[in-house]
Length: 72
Image (cartoon, helix red, strand yellow):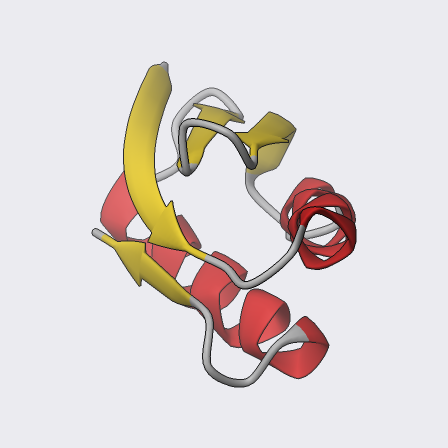
């Protein structure tokens, strides 16, 4: 399952770091962040609950940039 999320991030480098953090989150098969459109596309592993996984993605992304936001 794939979903798109609106994000708030301050710079392109932070967006790249958020993408890496999202990809390393258990339950995420793939993730990409587009800084220009402020969107994060996430593909979830089979059988995983997107809302639960996205809570962990947000926690991991806040380690990169503590004021980032993902609108879940």
